[in-house]
Length: 168
View 1 (cartoon, rainbow, N blue to C red):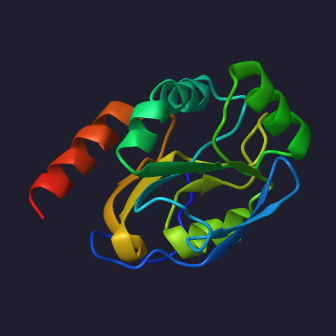
View 2 (tube, rainbow, N blue to C red; view 1 turned 120 degrees about the horizontal axis):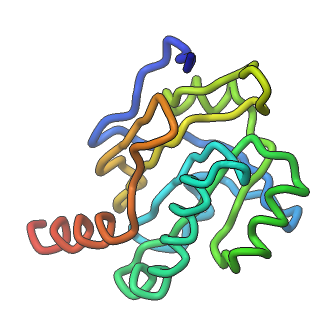
């Protein structure tokens, strides 16, 4: 059963919280300070072992050029240890920042995401969540899942950002 810390979920208009992540290359990534684009996507995923998460990340990689052309950056994070996160990046040619070893309690309390601290026969993990941020690091939309399915796709993000830009 998915757990949820009694944290406020992020909603449209909320300021995205400051978080420090460790990337697979060993660098720190300060959310949202280190974003380089006016629009950004934060993908919280279950881990390299999850086929749905890998499919989502591969999808975002396939749309990376179109997203970048629209001014959209991406960062992904999971509670995975370093080795599986690095292997997944290499195997699937992921070119956007991927963070590993994120604290279940910290991320859950900061973002309101669901998580599994002691799943039977599995590693501790988050459930998929996604956040689209606009200028000023304000949440434009948040997608939360309490299980394996239900997540952002790059095409939906691109269409949404195009809509937001055209409607001020």
